[in-house]
Length: 195
Length: 152
Image (cartoon, rainbow over the protein chains, first blue to last red):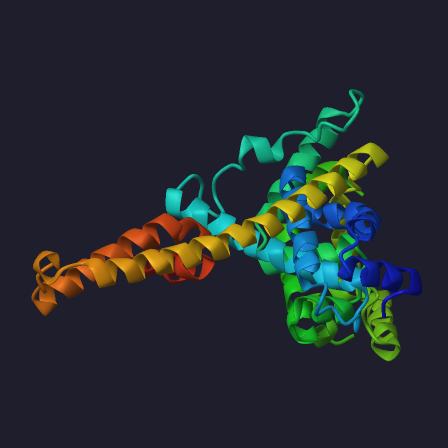
């Protein structure tokens, strides 16, 4: 359910108060951008997806009844947008033969070190980051969404099922396949890093 | 110890604390007696630790800029809906006038049905090409991609 303060902001936004809508955006922006970043691996893309989710909220203000929390509604919308985006990207790559889904190297831009990391970061840690990002890219869009929501966002399987409108059994299967795929992709790395 | 108790799916759920209490206890008992599954679980824990991607730090300024960006995009989208109605109305008016004013002499001659339908298909193909990259359903239904999918 929507919290009281949020309910007031929603009502004011519904009445056309742009400032109230901006406050709602400000409250949820960081979490939503983070979710988009984890799902796509790109900050720019994450911001675009988050923006689209907020614009859809703006368009749906009249019909938003508050049965689920605003946060859940935004999570659901962004997850679906991210899954569609990942599916589209995968198909585009297939069409243009830029790289095959499972054999060639990842795009150098995608696997470049995070600019936020400090200069003291070791080569091994950088390689680990690149390999993990690459391994995550190999997951199917739904596997990646389920894995991100469980592993990074800490949602329960039931919450993920509600968010993605899947059965709990399907969520379990996606999660297990995602974990299996990551283990296969990172097989050599975990041996080098050791226990 | 039964070999059938070694189920990797359950280890994933065990790691994420997604098993009910009795099931969780059963897996814990099994792990105590099965070195292979213990090794499997340790391995799984190691990989999942590697997969911790951390958190994107977003400063207050960046958040404000993003909020501003959403507000501007919202206003722009709202404005763009109004001219769309105007454009549709003026197009309909122009079409109506053209139908009234166009004399029969300059009306295009009807084409044979077969020629007409092939042109329609060509036009549809062209339109689809323009929109292809943004139309997810269309992309997924392309025969080429389905064949590629079958080949792995």
